[in-house]
Length: 439
Image 1 (cartoon, rainbow, N blue to C red):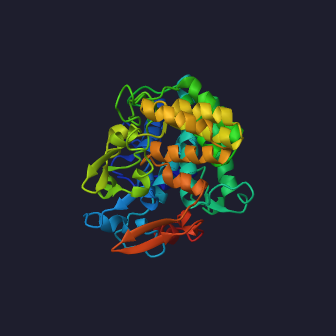
Image 2: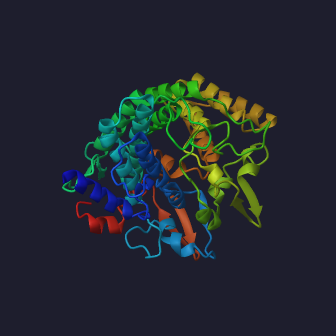
Image 3: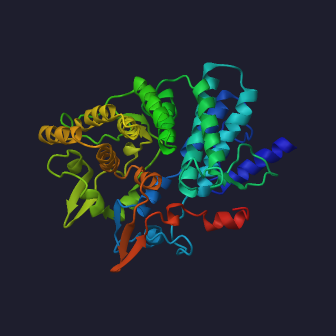
């Protein structure tokens, strides 16, 4: 009975955010509890499939976009754009708290049950490794939306998010500390490391985790935790599997395509078409580029009167979670933080050689060689802003670094997110708080 109730709860939880007319899409039709490797692969595939498009909405909070006040979708994003989380219009799209937990529920089914039911095989190990990695990745995004940025000095007392590792009707979902959530992320990452046996995934299923993707993810975790040496080690390990950069001097192609040479994992729809159509590029973003020598500018943006529209984003072909450019910029940043300026300079120059024309690169080479540690860190941060425009990094980068002041203007009135504003942490959505008083 307990097992039946457990799956009944999962069924109800899943139904809150997705269609329930074909539960888990597991064959044969009508089968509720997965038993075979094929069944459990279908469960995890559903977990990948329902992973939400939250990074698109997070971009509205940052300094990359201008919201089009005359657009038909204006009302859906206005309050998110103005950081009005306390009393938003009912039409406002909310951050997908429940949808992220929905993915976690699917991973929990695989982790808790496939390990017991399936015979040992490389395919089983790969499946379980992906489930652990996907659960860790989902918790990483949850804590970086709804929890305070990681601070080793306060993480043990900073409020995080609920931890759900089993499907249990009797569990009380109380938020855990930021430290506890990161401990779980690291534990799941280590389990995945033991189990994953595919170095990379083939095109078309590269939304799934591989060894390369796991080490790329590990480098991101340690970057956010300011574990600089560990971030470098993980980035170096990821680059043993994949390290090619798109040379924009040779090929004028967006570097974030899921089938491009830089792609490591392509799960996230980082800037979906609805938001792309409702926004223009903010001057704080476009002014960050050398419009003459930076080859990315013409690729990323299209002039529209006095504004710039995004050419990047809005296509399934641009799904991107990890790509090689991130590894180079992570290694450069972490090396600079450790005052290893020689490695930081070499790494960032290797990267920008593929992004600027010859004139721009030569000029920057001289400039970079003369930079102090502080100047180099600032330059690397600007390169992250330029490189990852509308790829879901900017809001998280602002949270973990400067938490700078941002001003958005609507109807001629300025609205300000002040430096270190508490609204850099998004509150739990109203419906989640109504359903769970513990939040």
